[in-house]
Amino acid sequence: MTSTYTEAVLDLRQKVLLILFKKFGEGLYSSKSIYECADDWINKGHVTTSGLVSYYKAYYTGGHDNT
Image: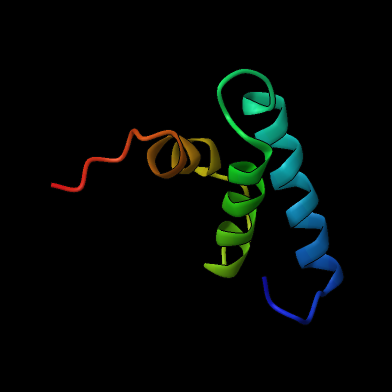
């Protein structure tokens, strides 16, 4: 994650983590993958959580098709 945290970035990261832990925090998914996804999401410049769950499913649960 970037070294400069604005209030907006911190707020978004908190929302991202809350969504991911609520949806994937129990079961087969690791906390590490959730935090990595949150960091990736923020570092890619997203400003909303729209599409976050699909992104996690595609890139962090083995559901991504590289074809």
